[in-house]
Image 1 (spheres, helix red, strand yellow):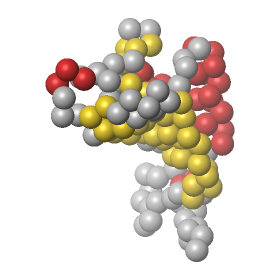
Image 2 (cartoon, one colour):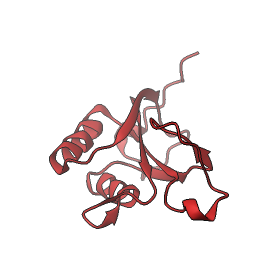
Image 3 (cartoon, helix red, strand yellow):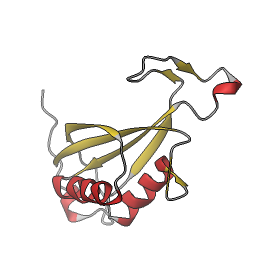
Image 4 (spheres, one colour):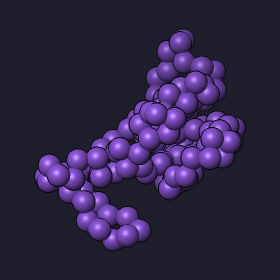
Length: 121
């Protein structure tokens, strides 16, 4: 299938409606019917303020970035974007075209996933 890799970058301590944003995003993706999502904590990084944050300093707990990603269809991405606009959540994101599928799918896979196409290249 063709779709997109939808990746969000949030501070690990950032909250929305009392919940950590990375947890809230995963919950919302699941509620919207997105097939899967993951969250990854950064070891180190910097953002628009060009301040380097590293995991080795205890006093910086809560300042590292968590990357939350989904591989989505165009419709799933639009649902998620609509929700984020409605909730007025301010997030930095990357949206990249992606080819995805299941190799050797089983009968439990949704029909749209069974169409395996060779990746480009």
